[in-house]
Image 1: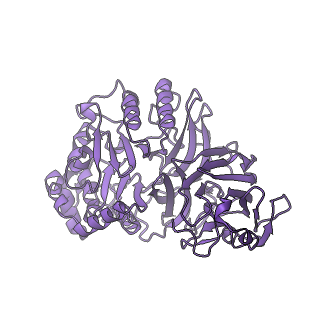
Image 2: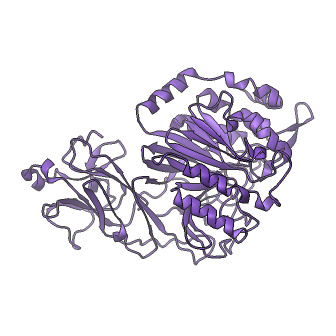
Image 3: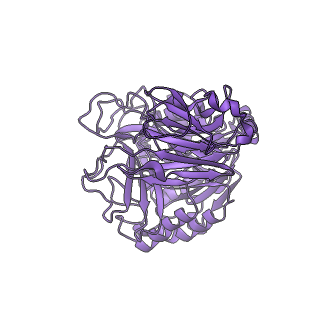
Length: 564
């Protein structure tokens, strides 16, 4: 579709889009369905605010960042995602004057038209409203343009169910949907279809807490859950948030909501609004529960700087990672109980810093900036700066994993204030024991050095490289089943702690280290063993290694690795 056709398509409004569902790719749908039925990992994408300034830029009509959207569409297609979610602010203004016709038009149809490429490739698109399309008109318009939010139309692409809000005037605005073993809950906090608010626009999420809790609690026990809204639990630039004008309002609702996220094992709460990548742990005001928050990177013409005095007035936030002034997106990979999230970002095309773009970047070079995750069958450990990783231990069946030694030596500090050092959130997870290995497969996330890019004194087109991949030096121990390993093999160094490399091969875990000297030891680990040392302890029936990378691990002889 060329630019003139796009403008024409967008100006058709609801009538023109009603026919777009017929333009689908059967082959793409069939290929995706076959992959899911095979039990292989699958993916979904997340993006955020796509406002564009009301300029004459022909690539970004209707105050919508169409150029960036089209770029991200291609990234999502290439990644093989099954659907994409956007957490609000679909446009900057709800009206614009079409330069071709001089007619005042609604802008949301242009955002709907920009999703057509996803539909044509068998990929669903599920949006939320933001504060830039918060009107009663937009409340009626969103479910008409995106009937999939009601569980209707041609663009569900494998979504098995859509759960409507328990409030009639929020149906198609607040909703939940299921795809395979993931449930996503979407919260709309703006003017409802009848023009009402819950007493105040600041309170529009308060009367939805019980519905969210019920929808989360009702899902299958072996499924993942994510909750998404436009505004955050605690913002970094904006004080206004999901539950009011600042993080100290509606405390009872905040307590109940964060308690629900914690109790129902929600993977993360995701929002936009702040136009930056920011990960943190948010405690409830009564400190009885904790939720993980991801503020999603900008897909817009503008970028924000966190306040010098944090919005976290009550000390409820622990910062994990942040990156400012970049354009980014997220790929979630679902592998049974295991979930891995990858954050990719590109320069905004100008010298690094807080800018308002008049024209799009033109060229995007995306780098993998951060990888993190968790597992439904694993554990979570929060490790503050200076604390030991030795608290990390977990088991699955007869396999036990432990970090024997290592300290979080991260020194980077958050941009909001010099008093907020970055913490680590270390997660564990498991895959069943393959028939030809001596242990279950152990997954470890969160050891890598924290992502931190924020200094406006930096220059150039940033980021210009991948994010951190190396961790503090630590010692990992994994137990093995002695009946599966002939005793002579224990001394050879071939049977050892192995890790999956970037090509999917199971190699000695120390081969993935950066630096160090590879050396095999038959016996127990001790503090004199440096980076690269690995061994087998027959007395405790464990394999161990001194490492500086996290990942997937197994006790195996090699070289091909277990057939998991």
